[in-house]
Length: 366
Ligand code: SF4
Image 1 (cartoon, protein in one colour):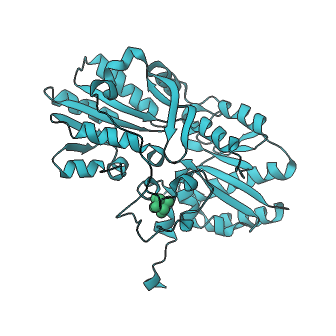
Image 2 (cartoon, protein in one colour):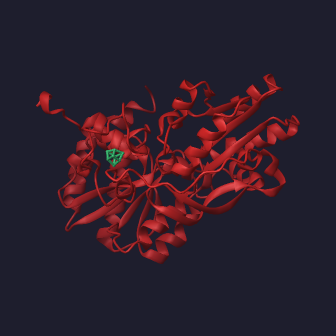
Image 3 (spheres, helix red, strand yellow):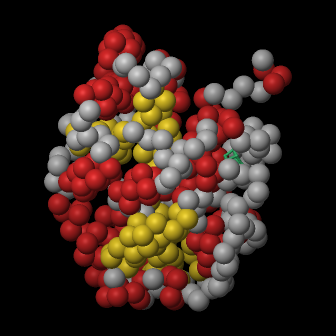
């Protein structure tokens, strides 16, 4: 297919691998922020074509994985209320809460529906005026504009029976949290191209300057990632710490102003807990006071409590890039995509799911 196949060309990938080999003179650690990039890296074996001195560390860039258990519990409690139609992206349905997941609520009789867009949830609300329709708004800056558009549409239509549970998170504060950690070994970043397509990359410039790390806005196809790694390594070898844009065909420095304004008009920035990581200041979005009537958390006063992850699950270490999924004792045993213990095994962007799908070899297959 045009615009895809040329970014998966094997010979060009091998040429990049050779260029990188010639460039590197010492050990470097680079974090790819986005789970979509992690999947490409593991699927196409990009890490296996790099010199042993270059380590790719998988970052926390999977919004499904970092949604706190308390939010999943809150979603499950609301979804179980009679007369509620609970709408969610498919990835969230199987993310384990403390006692159940949304599919479990559906199996117990709850009206839980998978939608592809919050606007679909608005339409369901229009078609069901006697029911309460709730949308589970999860995602990075990429999905926040369409959530904002759904709020404005619901307001325009005067809907009283539509609300949302907002768990949007922001990438730059997460990068700063990684860099501020005492155990941080990351020396350069591949920033998520789709997030920057919305937000631009101006907000990464002070981070690169403050922490002295190169940040390269990078796409998702194999050659995008090879080029992003090459650009990042070139900066590291030259002692530079700039923000550069590999994903020129999609991303501009300013981003998409219409989307940015949509986000700003409906949401305000708030502190947010990230699953496996903890609270990160100014890393989430919540509805502005003006739109608080669409806040499902306020509308349905369900109570939740702080929850500990299963002891065996090291998803926090995986999400902070300190450990690889294969280092988890439960990987491929107690924890599989069919029976996930932690969110990184559920989500299509989760690191554990990527390793299970592309790298895991069952003992009886060896
Ligand atoms: S393999 Fe499963 S139990 Fe282990 S860290 Fe990943 S999600 Fe948690």
